[in-house]
Length: 386
Image (cartoon, rainbow, N blue to C red; front, side, top):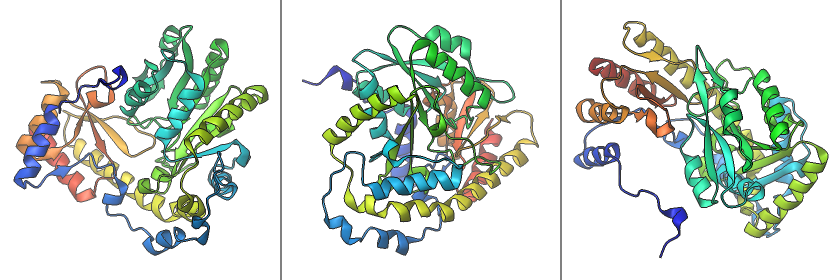
């Protein structure tokens, strides 16, 4: 009755089973995986956000495939202000989420069975998006040696006649590693050699831990490039469902891509009018939210380093940006078994590395936007156990 593309394993994993049992019993848990900023105790300017959604323009239905020009101009202004990048609003396509943006680009580039090169470790959402678009994911490794680097020899070996694009996450989730200038040059050369597009996910771009703005892929003109981002992370407003695709690259490729993307976007109809009208105000919220989040991320990193300095068992891996940290721990059992034991015995929830496609055991992933008191106590309990 159902399509093969939805034949996922639907049974709950052991960690989820234990988590649900403990929550139903009323146990107080320390959640070190918190990724929902609206539950992280941030100070939002709620009156202004709500007021921005009540514009009279919201009553007008004007289905522009790329999104309203006023909204796209606001996104272009954000890039100019924060990243010193001049974008033509005509190169912008508004979507309800980066997931929808991925779907549009996958549909644009791939026939059923075509391949995309994706980083490993990385966010597990890619697998589901690829299944729904009948696309095959081929991983290329990120290697760790005093920091994360792309493995270009493996990237070359992974390319086939069915490869259509390379996906990069800048900075990566969960490694927190940016694509460095030298890597971008190699990426462009590799993409030209194999006639591939680049798909760049920049949702965490504004969260460089040294507070120095990083260069956006929106400026990449060497090969056809699709850059995805949105207010889910930029303004910590995932509930507002406002994201976009920025197109860049050689003029001939760009023109053809935009014409096809416009038809795809028009087929799915434009995103809702209230959020489009509110786009300038929603983007402006970043000025209030980003300093709060970066202060918390840096305070939590300092607390991790303070506790880890007193022992030699665990290590925090280097991280440059984003909201996550990776812990290297002794391999006495699988990461899932360790996470389950930590939840059962210490009431601490943390993600095992295999959730993010780490090739080996010995890794745990935690969120750096966790409330500081919870993170401090949770790490104490983790170190007690390992």
